[in-house]
Length: 364
Image 1 (cartoon, rainbow, N blue to C red):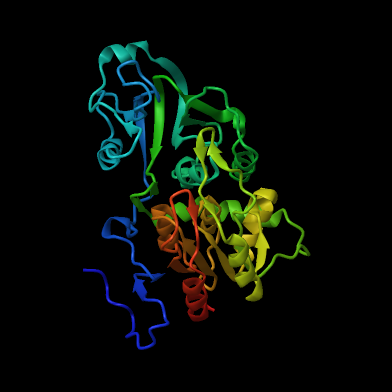
Image 2: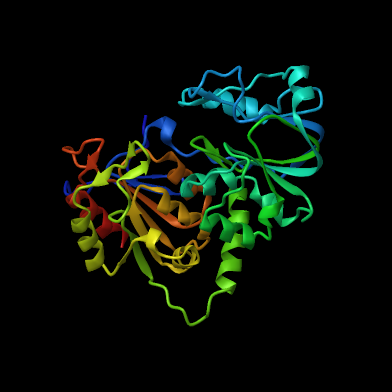
């Protein structure tokens, strides 16, 4: 049974409201499988001698439908964390597929790195996936030996970083020359495996914030103290490209100008984050009293906010489990409004202005 509203609703013009843990929902409560799971994962790092790291692709896998990428100890048995993650994501396409024990022949044929490496996870060029997947173990870099290599999984051995990734790695004192990418199988003489603090779409741990707090402070120190940032910001999706990737159209919001007008009237500055320098995006979110926008990767910037007085408003257009996980492990007061009108389609969302307006009256 879903939680009851936090107070009786006498005025039928007021959208239904639930408070679950530290999050507030309007209009629709997520299904049980979509509620955020917070787990305090210990900040431990396991050193593994003669570790085997399976590549992203392998001839034994069906093409395009499966991919691999896991860490194995010197007994050729998979680290339990990866086995558990595979079992929890078996419904996804493409799905992860790693054997519990790797064949000795694969170990012998693998390339070898005779250095200490820190396993980091997949290296993504997508903004949201980079924040959630490529930095899920970055907490360890605060204490790591700066001579160690950083080992990522990826589809290309060439390290071709996006501009935001370069800024983030610079703030973490990581020289890109230290990065290695496991496209194919590799054996590492000594591998350090930090505990992941974010399991995408599954659970999150407060330790995920450690690296983001460090990055934020480094970026803010590099900014002139006189540079002003808006107190209330609304992240618009209006200027995004029509495709997320080749052949993958992006859902659009048909009435975003109307939504922007509503927030502008409430004192919000309307911004298109993709047009701003990454340092400016971080500073905006770090200093804002209110951050709002429709579901999307731009809202993942809330990972850089550690202010409990900030109010975060997501206009939900999809389940967006990862956004709920971020809200659950960061201290800002989070409000998630199910905003999709009944006449919407998967390709074009129309936001329910009445629901948004009535919800915002309670939030402001």
